[in-house]
Image (cartoon, rainbow over all chains, first blue to last red; front, side, top):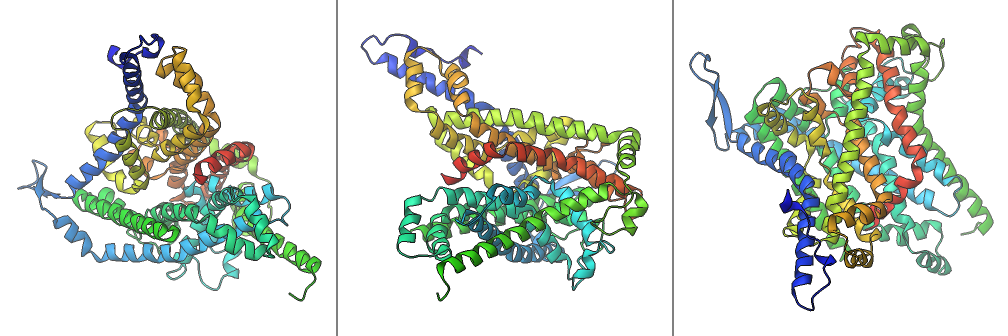
Length: 310
Length: 284
């Protein structure tokens, strides 16, 4: 433990030489290592090692040898699991579902969040705090419970189903239903992020726009939105990553309808492969692919954001 | 253009408020449904409308909820509070120490650590569930409190936020002054840095609390003993029985209401604090 004790170098009056500042810096370095150690350990143990382990697992498959008395043995299959996942029609279907979800959910949710943030930020609004808190409230609801509330509302007899043109738990209705659940949950959170960014827009810029004769709508669209574009791209990255992990909402709905298959989304596919089929190699390969797609899409969005801001 | 300025101002004000009322109704009505449904008996639940009150049955629902399976729901509340409360206190403290060190101290590997942390923000947690489960089973901790608690302490985004707060709230001159006064680096962090970062830490705490409170995948994968479940997993398990056993409906709904109330109250009460913390984090 003595090694970890920071040096109190600065307490020694500098003897007009080079020794004291160097020791001070070294003390700072040691203190820095002590302070980051807990997080660095956690990050290694719960993120880096699992990623490495998933990569390793994805290259093997369990084979039962002989009569199976000796338990399964691991056999190296190189990229065999990846080939298996990539040619699995269930995996294709899950990717298709989540792609459709992303394409519908993200523009609606972020568009609505931006619209509401601009409305609350507009000069004419009263009771700002009331609106922002009300719309934000669903964020505080655990996703399982969000799923349960909407599952009940989607069920026949809730009164809501009579108002809808399609059965929200039916084959075609299920995707819009899941989009609605996720939108309900996240629109307020993103609205608050956008609203706080809008409040940082310098007031003199808005004054200047008004002096030039720009109305509220014009100011919002041509002055405010461009200024919070970096925030919007960050929100977009987080929403893309979150959407690719879509798991809880479809799993909860599975209890209420047969329209959601056990491999409906990629995360459900991983869950099914790992914990129901106990095919760890296939599940690991699917996990790695999911992380790869997520990384590629985030990189793409960031690239786009850099190009825009240039 | 043809409208008088006063007229167009009045209509736009009306339109803006109508839109906000609609958005607020969309957000709040499902929660109103949760409240009205929690007061209904099994019979009224299927015979009365979604938003109307039936016979007031909340007391009976609550007592059924807390006596079901020998009061396991109470254990779920306790577990959720332990996972989220303890996890968020410890987690935000770990984030603060790391963020402060990255912002204010020079140490080998500082840039690399920050780069890996940022990459960690982007890793989908569902992709980590399987390897975490297998690693935990090799350590023989699957099915224990720790298998859920420890992975949820890791909060890379919290470290990012803490770094932003430390840079904004802790002036370098103050640290220099402490150093010339002879305070050690660790003591400086605890007595000067940490208190100055407090408003930002409330935000990290609150959002990590919500993250753990709402987490579902990890407990689902790691736990089998209902006594260790957090509320989300327990209520999910009950919900898978409702189609066969309708008597679970009031349990699931009343339990859901109890799981929502504390967080909603915390967000409303701590409104100013998390908003300012979020502003400081998101603008940078």
